[in-house]
Image 1 (cartoon, rainbow, N blue to C red):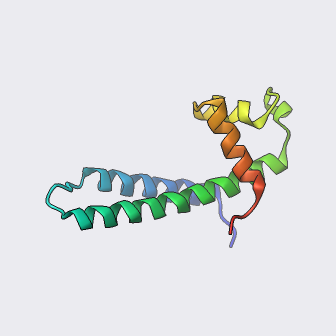
Image 2 (spheres, one colour):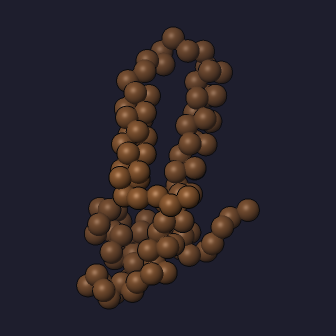
Length: 102
């Protein structure tokens, strides 16, 4: 299946809309067990999105050199673009270049 930019934007917009809907839901009436189940499900969704992000980052890293973007390392580029610490950026680069996890 070939995807295009519009499909990616639409999918990410739908994910953002879903996250906003979830954020507005009250949890006060839920039982402790229900809250724990929701936390587990939210973590599973977070891991799915993180996996997609790692695979996309691995592709970007493989396609070009950081010097093309005026930086000495991918961690510098990510830290600047995503407004995260260099340490967090280094962790993400390491995960992305490590390959698929079991």
